[in-house]
Image 1 (cartoon, one colour):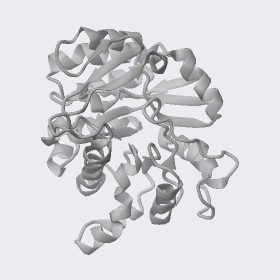
Image 2 (tube, rainbow, N blue to C red):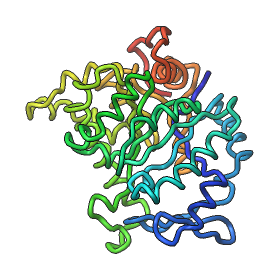
Image 3 (cartoon, helix red, strand yellow):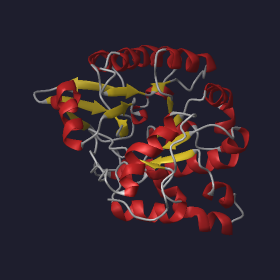
Image 4 (cartoon, one colour):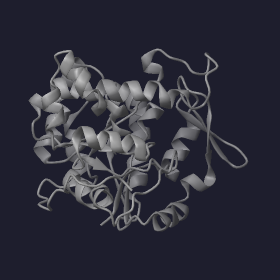
Length: 320
């Protein structure tokens, strides 16, 4: 089965819940779709078609993908809201995601980080979610990883993966709107920095404590694997990072140049295809190449199932 591990699809329950909000994060409905209002980011558009299940199913056919895993975009900042504000939005997301046709879609669960509750992991896995996603902003320091340790440990005990996704930019003290930055600014600055920080924090603190936890970083962890030489030069655990078969990286927003570079750093066994639809919609690697087969089939299976025994892909070859 060819799997896209990273898509976003706002269901009607979540759209309605965000429309009702009087503060960020929120949506307002216009003629052709909705407008996102997020803390620290310029407003952005969400066309009606991007929330249309039939349109997304057709895109899967066009992409040659059998199944997509959707998740709550942590860039919205929902997980960082006070628990009483986050709960109805998380419930709306989960209700909408659970109603998707399971033969074509799966979903990552999401949890609030103000009052992290390990039992929420059990409840989400019992409902059929493949794992749990967390914002990189909640894992951006060793202390932050320790704080969420009980929640991460519950994932490890359950044999379910963690997905680390960029979080809201306002937590980093930036305000792209006030600074007059272009719409792409947060994705190339805040998001990249967040993912790098979360990767290094997990490498330093999370991996020694959670040796069996499978973890997926969006957007190639902001190209953090390319920092291995600098990490070693500064006395960091570069060897641990270079030989960690349970840490995975999705390719969202990146193309052949970056993928080739990461392949040279860590090999082909830990990369998976993530399109980030509808935000980006990255090209799907050719499934008939060695690396394309790994990104779409072998590695997603290893990420999602602790019992997968399919052989790992040879190091030869390159991305489609």
